Image 1: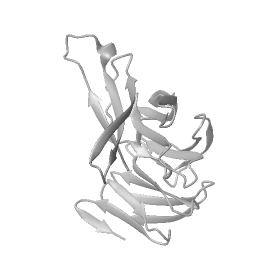
Image 2: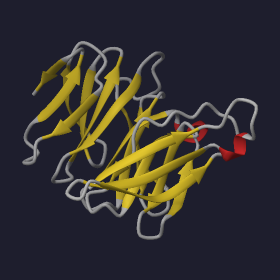
Image 3: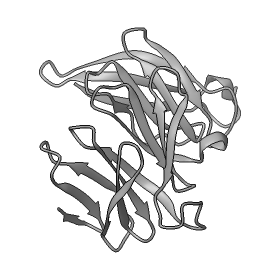
Image 4: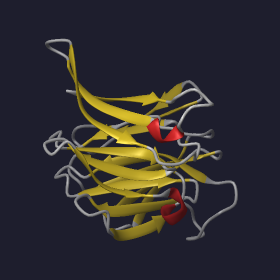
Length: 204
C-alpha cells in the first residue's frame, strides 16, 4: 500500500475554507485508489504538502507541512488525531514513524528533531541537528529517517548537506557529509547502512 495526498485549492476569489487535503491508499495489486480522509483548512496560511508518510502497519499517516507543522491521521478511524502548527515546532519538512508506530519524528526550519507520541502529539524529546545544540540561522532539516530496528534516527540538513545520526533518545553518534542539501535518506533493512540523495547523487 502507498500513501498518497492530493492538495485541492479553490480559485482565488472563492471561500478559502473549502481548501482541503485528501488522503488515500493505492492498492498496487489492484491499481485502485481508495480515499479515506479529507482535511479542511480553515485559514489562508500558505500550507504546502509535499508528502504523506505512513506508519509501518499503515494505521497512521503523518502529514508534514500541514499548517507548516505536523498532523497525524488514523486510517481505521478515518479522522485527524492531532495537529501541531509550525509556530509551535518550527516549519516541518519531513517525518518518519518508529517501527512500532508509537512515536513519530519530525523536523524542519528550526533545525530541531522532535520525537512525538503518535497517539496524542505530545512532545517526548527533542535534539538539534547541528553541533551548537540550538537554532542556527539558515540551517534547516530537510529529511528524516528511522532505522528498521528503531535504534537510530537520521536527519538530513540544508544547505550544508550534513546528516546527523542519533539514538532514539537523541544522543548524536555520527555525522556524514554530502556537501549539498540532502533531499531524502533511508536506512537499509538491516539498519547498518544509510543512503542519502543530494545534488543528483546517491551516497551509501
